[in-house]
Length: 267
Image (cartoon, rainbow, N blue to C red; front, side):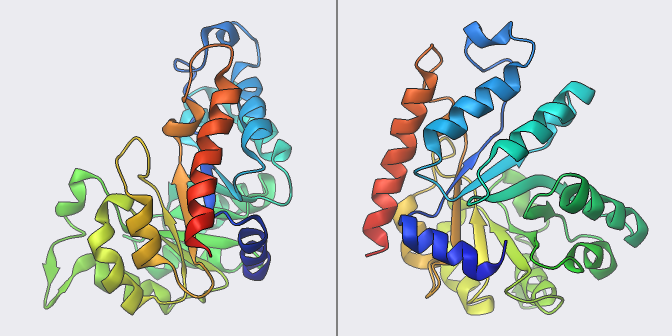
């Protein structure tokens, strides 16, 4: 998907919600767990319930890879079920030497035709370059995360700057706003002002709203740019809004709540 197409979808729908399909087989409603295709059936119901309120879906590949071949099949079916109007993200956090990354890129851009994939930048440009070679695809680089371990490296000073600031500056020079996005955790809201000084035009994928406590109002205030420039991911607070047979209806209500709030910030 092209950047302008994504921007159009956001403005048309008045939503920058990304629904995270972090589908844990042990957490889906019990009446589905005995289904031979439980994960896909759950995802299908969630997509049907939320597609009018979001512009993107993020599939956390770990929850599928852990199930072996069956999980990969569920992931592929889920990806193909998502409407073509929605931006699809493989949350795979890949990144390795060039020839290995080339295979990862082929996996998530060709074999599984996602619009974007998350990557870790620790190994440098040659580990990310293969992803950037694809047209109309986005490489989403970890920038500033919201986990406790961010203090171990990302928030350590390197000279007069934090390490994550140097990562943002350096990685931004490898691509363009048409093929690069960055992950910035929602619980790091105070950092968005400075981040926007470094990368004012890039889209940001912002996880951590909902169950992790990120504040949508603050994110929208400090991180939004002229093109909106945001995909705010909500996973557990939507897909596990209810654990009984009305799980999809409750997921719809949860997604609608975020959609309604987002529409206020887009006026």
